[in-house]
Length: 191
Image (cartoon, rainbow, N blue to C red; front, side, top):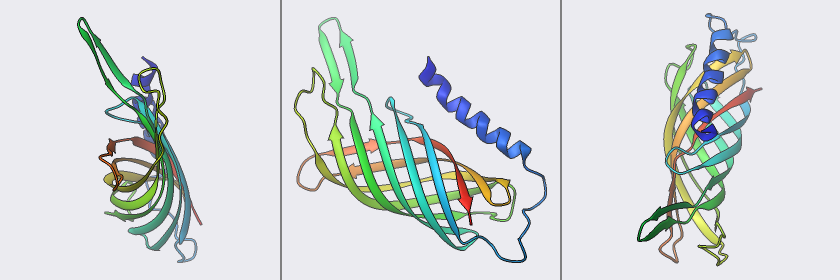
């Protein structure tokens, strides 16, 4: 029940931040646009039960283009279904990775700017340990992700960001291939 409320609560917070912002374009602080940003975001997984947290440091050579270094931790829980004649189980995992990310925002000077994102990185995957999955593992993984979102100015130097991304992780030496899809909301402080 509470897991079903997380997504609507995040969306309501993002929309209320947008409503509190004025309808004018942001002031330009003497013609200088902020070049760097620090961002923090969190949210639930869409398909599997779980969550994701991330922090990022960004550089914006233009208002519509941002290059980020992102550190993310994504967790999915085990998915176990019991039937009359048995059960089916899928093992969850915790993935931690560092990635380079590119974002391109459309209508960058408008109040709400939709953006596309793409990133690649590397990290580790640690499958959950439980009664059904007792063996402990650690995998080195490569990560590719893409998605989209919106950026909403809340203050002249503070943006609210809401996005979703499809994260695909694989290990070259085994058959491991994991897919996660978090919906994240957060803030980006630009300076």
